[in-house]
Length: 262
View 1 (cartoon, rainbow, N blue to C red):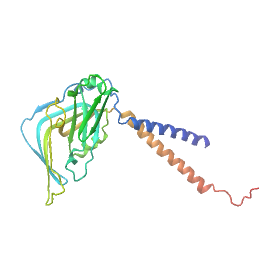
View 2 (spheres, rainbow, N blue to C red):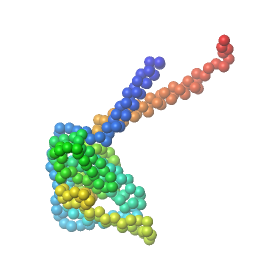
View 3 (cartoon, one colour):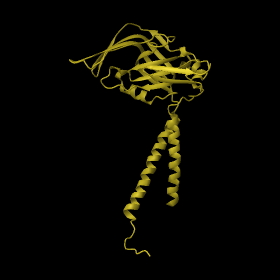
View 4 (cartoon, rainbow, N blue to C red):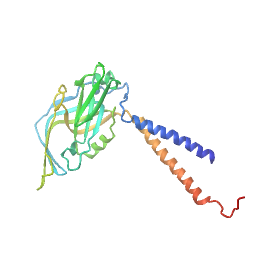
């Protein structure tokens, strides 16, 4: 029994280290593999609509009007992801996630993995900076505001990590939102207009996508996520066993009070 619990302690230490390391790297950019999807090497596909139409839908306290501009499909590597998690009464609740994606030579030449470039997101912008000429092409990167209320798509978005190779299909859109009900005083209106070119920069250069589907082509952290999950389960199981051992000692191995010690 002594050796058994000694082994458990060793496994616990290894599991804690494995959990900490994989947790640290879970949002880091890592190489997906040499087998990059062919569409990742090409520019996003933007095609004219067959006919003009509008999409209207209610959500929470708002009424949304979506004006599709183009059919759109983008395939690339997620270099930064941000969950804005707006409040329930915020018109931006339908645009919870922004994904900053790179493609083309930024991926084929592994430019996005260079230690001399970094990506960050805030205030609905995707920012990048690099310390030397690394061949980064700003026209092969975009920040994407993703519009959806579909629960299965939202669940998939939750699982996407930096470094994943993904494909998004939908439409580039302009969208407005207005409060509904008798009292709209606490509700803000919203207008979002999508960029329709990959060569613009600054405010208004982001793509607003009404998402029809998302596919994860390559999960950059699949193995690390599995190790992280197994390590978490192992830590929980070992602590449970140690707790049972302690409970057994306290309940059943109480010292005999009648023993007189010299």
